[in-house]
Amino acid sequence: MTEEQLIYDWNRQSAGADLTHSLEVLDVTMVEAPHSPAARQPALSERLRLLHQLDELGLDLVCLGDAGEGWAETLPLVSEVAESRLKVRSAVLCRNHAAELERVAEASEQLGQAIHVLLHCGYSPLQEWKGEAWRAARAERMQESVMFAVGLGLNVTLLCPDAPQAHPAWLVDTLGRALDSGARRLALVDTTGCATPEGVARLMAFVIELCRRKGMPQRIDWFGFNDRGLALANALTALESGASRVHASVLGLAERSGCVPLDLLLINLRLLGALDRPMEALASVCQRVAETYQVEVLSNYPVLGKDAFRTGTGVHAAAIIKAERKGFSWLADLIYSGVPAGQFGFEQLIEVGPMAGESNVLHWLARNALEATPERVQALLAAAKSADHVLSDQEIRAALGETASLQV
Image (cartoon, helix red, strand yellow):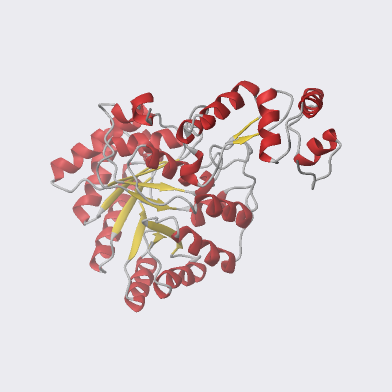
């Protein structure tokens, strides 16, 4: 029996899902993680090391900082991408200031490498209360900045804040101005994490139609926050609805409840068949990010948490062991997990604890080359059932009255 014969993947068979188009991932960890109140502010040397690890993920772009007050910290990172000939492309944040755009253009020329500009729109639809004159002045300034950047030869993506809460007329005016001024891409930003997948699909359809009427290529980014716990679902919906790039941060690190988690985005795109790139470095990159920003990866965090592929439950352990004994390693990896551990450099782990059955005990004994005598099995089951946690190897050996070096 094969995996295809046993499992019907409704995720890939959905008539509405379309992830066959070319898509990109833009990493924003270095600009968003510092906004997390729980994160520390790493030194430049630490970010340079992190940059090299991020490059191992095969990302398309990485936003390295801003061209304003943070330029002194951003420029060394941009230079490192060029001088070390990293595969990832550089992007930087800019506001509507000519000086910032000129800095980026000058650095791009000196390094002989394009630097992508993420240009802040400069105003939000939620600021309409300030009046028509204020909005018109801001819109004109944004338009001038886009034209100035394009004139410098820069590739510009306009960041449109609060897009899921904008009235259609605001979107038509603002995004239309940006496209008319030469913006290469539009980035719809769910600044407050208020969007739902259905809302994302409707918003994408509206903006795609606007681009069509303007006779412009469909180049739309999505960047959403996680206040409602929907950031990942929204990102996947945006891609299915026609977005070609998603902005994401490792472990979802950003302000408040964070944003699209880059790691889970890559994992899901891989499982959906939309990305075909190595994922072996993902765990080490996430560990580096956690250490760099001194944040905790929750034990039940999908795929990367320490409990993601561990089970201490007897019925689960029995099913995994039976699949292994039948020679169906692929089934052992999927029977109680929606993610095949081996595909991402992990393995299924069977532990001994209060919820364990005989299968857990037999598996531990076999894994540690110890004979499964009735006395050992009963001793371990008794210790497990009387505990209030999963037993460590040291605790198990103590229950057996054995030393760590004891063999059959």
